[in-house]
Image 1 (spheres, rainbow, N blue to C red):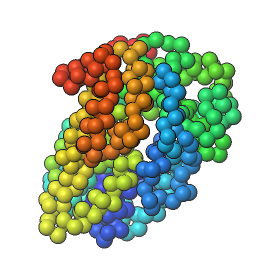
Image 2: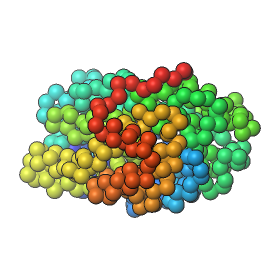
Image 3: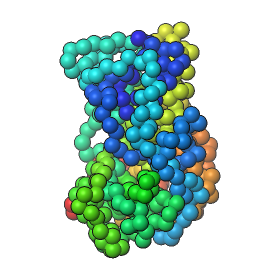
Image 4: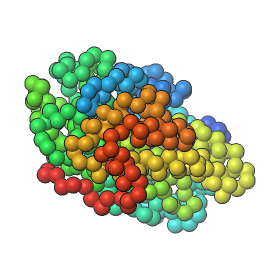
Length: 394
């Protein structure tokens, strides 16, 4: 094979299909290739790939946020129909060899070992195995920084006190749950068909805030607004790392959340993965004629260009600043962030390779911040990562 992709989530499936479409002999291995995806995926409408059918978009809504005051973000948010997305990407796997199995390592260059003893070989190996990164010898360690959330799916009419029709509540930092301690926010987005997902979210904590705490806060927040949760309401549980180092597997390229392409300040990665997949496939096709090493090098240069590496480091500094802030300062930080010009906010939240734009956005944020916030930002740039978060009752 030319390319073997490990992991059949959105990133892996998109890349495998893209590789096959440029004529590469491609394989995809996953423990359960046809298992339905259960996570909810969203992105700003401007990030939607041009070739993604409209049928894959379940709902569109205007973004709004609440820190100390309300802010219209000025961008439309798109929530994906996840079964439709999975079906769309599966339909684009024509010609891809799909293997069912659990990858346990890359014992040799161009080789993947499966748990049942099978060995698969390809010129280029890609680890798109998500947070578990099965081909990275540095397995994820417990206790790292994580985004966690607990949500329920409710009828849109029942949550009219929180959101208006045609609106997506990106963040609401008001402590309507009635608790002090580690700050959390409400995320409320339309799913289409008259349904809304409402989640209590811990943006970042080391280690992640327990789901039991988030569930309790969500129930209290909804009760505060007179919203009852039906006994049969579907729940959604979220937990994924934000501070994993870049993939270090020898002779392997990390892709998607395994890269990691996860934005340390938002947790988003699907948009970046879908956008990069056809570019990465093209890079493999162009450089495989010069050998596997050249193709792998071209892939790494695309996924982790010099600008992308620098921006990732800058965003990690922002993550550390957030982790060190006293709880009462977090809403003020986001109040300051949401007053940035729209172009700066957009660049910081979405651009992976616009280093000048990201530096300008962060510089503007520093200039309009008060002295207390400036100390947080400077201190986080100079000090090593905090070992653990402040203690919070669970």
